[in-house]
Each structure stands twice: as C-alpha cells, then as structure tokens.
Image: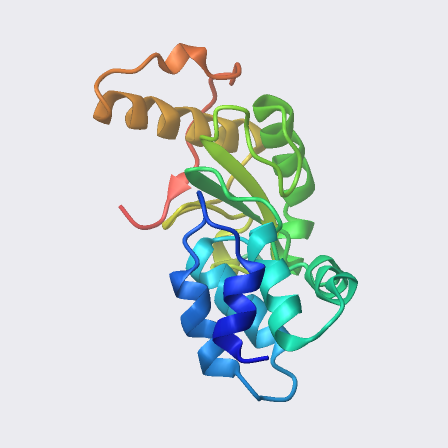
Length: 194
Ligand code: FES
C-alpha cells in the first residue's frame, strides 16, 4: 500500500487536518525505525499525538496500533492530549529538587487543582515537571511559557501563576481573573528575563 493510500484510508475527515501528517509520512516512507521520528514529528506539528494520527501512522507503517500506542505511552516526551494555552514547567533537576522544587510543585498543583501533565478545566494551564531548565544558579526554577522564574518559594510560585493569569485576562479584554481556582497572595519570585 502506498503512503498516500494508507493515510487516505486511515485518516477520517472532519476536525482533523491530515495535510501535515501526509507530508510527514511521505518524508519517512520506506525508512526503517521511522516510528519514533514520526511520532516526534506529529507531536511537533499538532502539539500532541491525535488518535487519528496514530491510526494513520499504524496503518501506513504496517505496525499494529497497539505497538504505536505502546511507544507513545512508554516515552514521557509524548503527549496523548493537547496542552492548554499556557504551560507551567516546574524544574525537578537536581539543583532545583534539593532547593525545594517538590514543595513548589505541590503548591502549584494544589492551587490549580491539577497534577503533572494535566490541564486545568478552562484550558488555561498545563503543568509539566521537567528536567534542568539551565538556570540552576536560580534554583528552584519554573517557566510559564517562555518566561523563567527563579529563587522560588511555594508561595511566590503560586503568586507568579496568579499574576500571569490576571495579566492574560487584562490583555484579553478584562476577562474575569477571579474565576480562576483560588491562588493565595505571596511575595513574587524573581523573573529572570524581564
Ligand atoms: S536543576 Fe533546575 S534549572 Fe537546573
């Protein structure tokens, strides 16, 4: 079966833009060991691994769907659900871990009501625990999207998330920032890139 035929058979129309996937499958056609690069490419395009894409990849590569799902769920780098609008990355590298990252994580998770890898109901935040963010001298560290916050305490980390949400609401027409899950006031952590 050709790659094009495989995708056409595997990708159902409606709500899923299959065009980028077609390009990826063309790129990796007939290559050995293409599954992981294909999954990485698919995630780079869609931000996660849509179920439709995994069906298409399985069918096109002639791999069992269980194998594709097995690889996708084995490696932490792959996501099976979309990320929310903003991603809070909490560093759990060694320097941050010994400087209090577990408590920082705990407080952010408690206040947003979600755990590692989960999205808030309003799709405003995803939390991701990650390895070293490259700012060990400012441990413990987190990032909200591209902005880095260092020398955090649990309270200042929560305040940074709260301030971020309030700023977003103001920039988007004064939406109701108070509708967010409760986040306690605290002294601000140190933003590294302002
Ligand atoms: S260990 Fe957290 S920034 Fe390096």
